[in-house]
Length: 406
Image 1: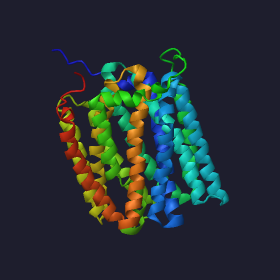
Image 2: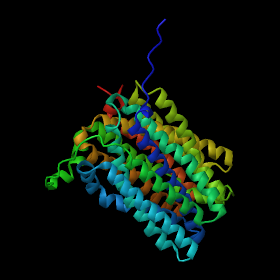
Image 3: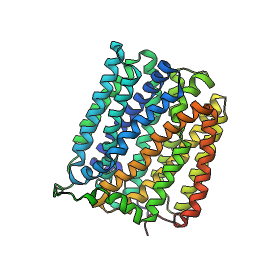
Image 4: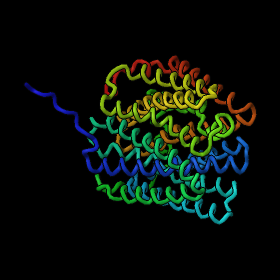
């Protein structure tokens, strides 16, 4: 009797394991801080528009730094870049803690510190994305993508819930804890062994700054998946409005806000673990579109809900659908991009996804200020379904994709 060979484990590769745990802690710290910032801003202002400004403060640095980020990730040691970014995030979190403790932290200063964190994450995200494929064999990239998604979702489960609980102890506690976690993440990424020699440092022509964008434009599969993410999440994102739902609609405190922010990650983690064990092998394109439509439907249910349990279930389903789409998009981008271009393409990818998330938060805040929180979420859910349906017609080659390779 012959047993079937076991699939290789990406966590068995020490460089990837260090990378993965660093990503877990960094994302955990970020989401702890995000819960504290959201609750504190809404407590200080009582205005949904300011919750949108938090997203805008993270969005603007990404827009201005994207082209520079791609060049840096392709020309310099990606481990060093990621470590510096996490160090900056640690300092920003410590400043939030000290400012809250001393009483000089107002909304304007909070937005400035959020923007600094956004600038650091604008470098960290694409750099870590470009680093991951160099740490595992090519055939393990889809599994690595799923485990990377699980790292994000694990952190989004524990981070918001822990951040909400710690905020109940004291407003400075989640910021100080996040600062320490960022430092540990810096040490882990610094321990990743070098996988390649120094990159060339020749002068960079102007057109090289735009090469990532041009590469995407010339490959319709990449253009389709990235633009789908941009418009779907831009319309469907409701994270910025969770403090309003927690305090004014569902009647729960900071702990409840942490629970709401954790719910999508609970669903997403279960899906990402399933994808890590059983990667998608067929009907990749149709599955991606189906996931986006389910994301929109779950957003509508959450927006209309006034019961905590139904809201949590809707957010869990939303998270499952989102991570399914994310893993497919990320795997397609990494597999179809040569390593020499991964930094620039990952920067463009981060611009698309970051734009959709952060600008989506701003859109939600503006719509909530104009029409109310519930209509803002419902409009976003319907818009997401419309975008997915339209993209199936505009990019039929996406719908026909059967497998990641070939």
